[in-house]
Length: 426
Ligand code: AMP
Ligand code: MG
Image (cartoon, rainbow, N blue to C red; front, side, top):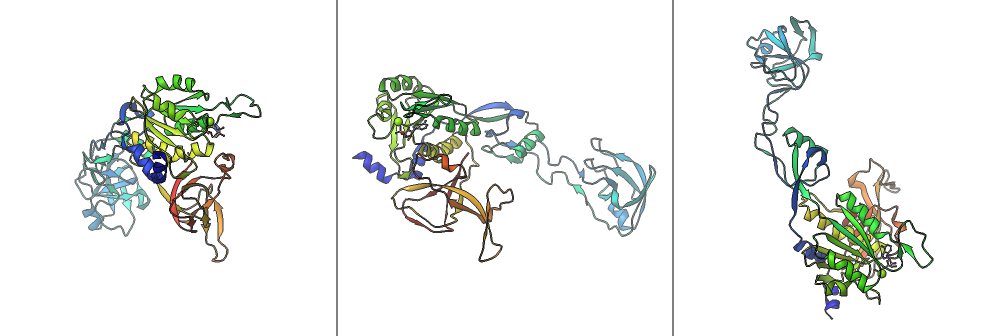
């Protein structure tokens, strides 16, 4: 009775909420900058000096006093070369100039750069500039502190470290970086019919694929994962889970959680003291999904074994949970419009595989469709073409798809152009 009631109530959003409610606190570790890429930053990063740290010359040319230009001076005595990396020089007279390169410190007293393209003649002694140059104080000078002041926050904790973050980290001297320590994940397949990848299955058998698919996703997330297989035998399940439930690793099970005679997972988890937070979600695929907290406090996801169910539930629930546990603040859920109307007549949320395409309106009557792998696909024209599978076991047919839309349970008819949350396959 309780189960049926839960099932009626629990939407995918409710289910995720329950999962995120009491995840373990994120923990941190320190890595060298060279190993920080892809990790989630766990500290705020501040400017350790002004950005830029000095008045930086932005063009190769000569540095002059704009007051001299204003008076019509066109020929200057060259005092020397101010190259990048040399200490600041000094310029006192409007009749003088310094030869400068990009990246040099603006000489003291100078306040204008004349680019070399506008210098008609230059020797070691003298530089002559073309007619018509106007006085323009601080033209081609990147003023000290004009981007950020010393102590300004440059990157917030929770950012995923990519090339732009690494560039900033390097510039403020972060040779070592505090990042989130990822949880370890144990991926467990269950089922007497499952054989290893390198085995030829008998007719009644299949190769286990779910744990491989999930390991691949974990690799993309930077999460260390281990695969384990358990047959449909209560004793074997109990023996394996007893130890695992007392460790800190996250557990993700696939299969064995529905109402079949060999679905032993819920009762065994219960027996071993795992606390069930919910089972049954108003969704297709993946309705029998359950979530537990182990005696050690680690999350335990029990996903239905059908490959589409495992894959969709992993993307809809496990990935956001991992992001949350890493303290990642930048995960954004995109919405995308349906390319064509879609009908689904069950009172369940539908995870609908879609292929992304750009609809380019070259003419009103004959819009052209471009497939998403086009690097020029622009976001505004992206549409999600429904590519429903036949059932939740039919997973080889999603190869042309890019992810799935979540169509909510409340409605059965979904109009072309209506926007829904998009979950990309990783
Ligand atoms: P179950 O959730 O255990 O009832 O499994 C549902 C369906 O998914 C069955 O047809 C299983 O054979 C299949 N299945 C379960 N686990 C896996 C797996 N790791 N790889 C591929 N198929 C699986
Ligand atoms: Mg099974």
